[in-house]
Structures are given as structure tokens and as C-alpha cells.
Length: 253
Image 1 (cartoon, helix red, strand yellow):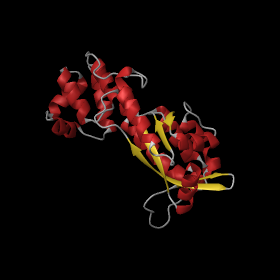
Image 2 (cartoon, rainbow, N blue to C red; image 1 turned 30 degrees about the vertical axis):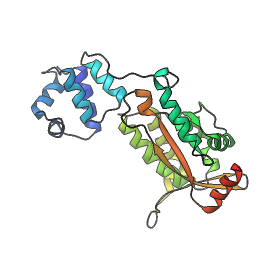
Image 3 (tube, rainbow, N blue to C red; image 1 turned 120 degrees about the vertical axis):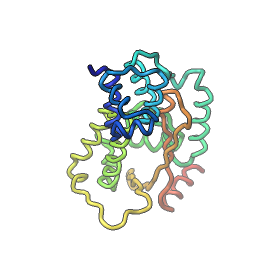
Image 4 (cartoon, rainbow, N blue to C red; image 1 turned 90 degrees about the vertical axis):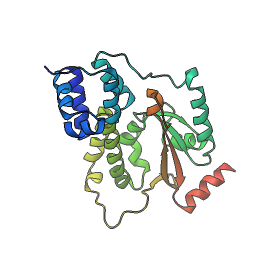
């Protein structure tokens, strides 16, 4: 009889589009043993659970779920970013985004809530009505299009990004909902890519008579074993044209 562990393992194997043979080869066990684990004919050891979770590139929270479904204790903590254990991490985040000024930099969690921002990022997002603690997903679906001159193009890119992130986490309803909402937008639905794609797709924001053309890089913490930390990402924006660069440099003086 299939167990909760077997059901969860099968779900994640499906999310990663791996056959039992694929997973067995990658995890250095037989496909037969994978089958037995999924059907409940065999019970996994704790090291086996962790090995399979690593092979499936499961997020830390999902690995905890896989462990508990097999009757083992959780392995990964979910610390608050304000905890003493993450003091050096907070310092690293603050150092990174502060030194990215005069260009915007923001810190987002797994659900795209704004955790922190540098001076430039706070000012820019404030102009759009977005503040620390707010959801960028809500801003994107409710009012984000008002500020973007190339809304269909940016939304098309965001749909792919949201669906990729949701798949990585094993399916996130909030991310899927926003991706589906964007995909249902008439302008986005009718958008077609023509000709060769550019090297980057900048977002062109308009505030009054000012247009800011920006592209982003995303940084995450390497070797992060804490759930909160593994889910955080720092998004640093750069000017995509000379006029935008001049505007931010002038504002800093």
C-alpha cells in the first residue's frame, strides 16, 4: 500500500520529469528499489531520504516534508532573518544592497514579498506605491502594468520566470495564480516575439515624464541550509541605456 512518503517521492519525481530508472541511476540505487519505496513495499533510511531529496533538487522545506513523511525528524531550520544566527547574513545583505546605490536593489522572499531595499530601490518602488512588506506579485497584477511601457513584453518574460520558480518549489499556488493571471491578459496573450531576441529584455518604467530602462541580476546565497536563507534573493537593477544611467547618477549627487 502506497505511503505518504511514496506519494511525495513520486510527486517530486514527476515534477523533475524523471523515470524510476532515471532517479535510481542518479541516486545510485536500483529502479526496483525506487519502485518499492513509492509503493510502500520498502521503507527508506534517513540517509536514503536525504540522498533522494538531494538528487531531486528539492527545496529545504520540501526535504523536511519528505523526512517527516518517512517518520524522521526535520533536518532544516526556518530561522527568522532577525535571529542572532543570521546576523552575518543580514550584514552581508545590507552591505551588498547599500553598495549598489545609486542603482536600485531589493531583497525578495519566495513569494516575492519585499524584505528590504537600498535607498534607490526604496525611492523607486515608493513611487509605484510599493513598500517594505508588500507583495511584488500583487503590485504586478493590480497596478504594475500602469508603469511599464513595454508591459506585454515584460509580462511574457515574467510568466516564464514564475512558472520556473513554481516548478522548482514543487508547485506554488500563489506563483501559478499570478502566471495564469498574466497569461490571461489580452495584451500579453496577443504579444508575439518577432525577430532575434535581444541580449537582455529591460523593463521600461514611466513615472510622469521620466522613463527608466532597467535590467536585473539576481543573487542568492551559496550553500544555504536554512529555509529562509535559501529562499531569499537579492535583485540588483542596472541602467539599460545612457539616459537612465545619467538620471540615477545625477540623483545620487
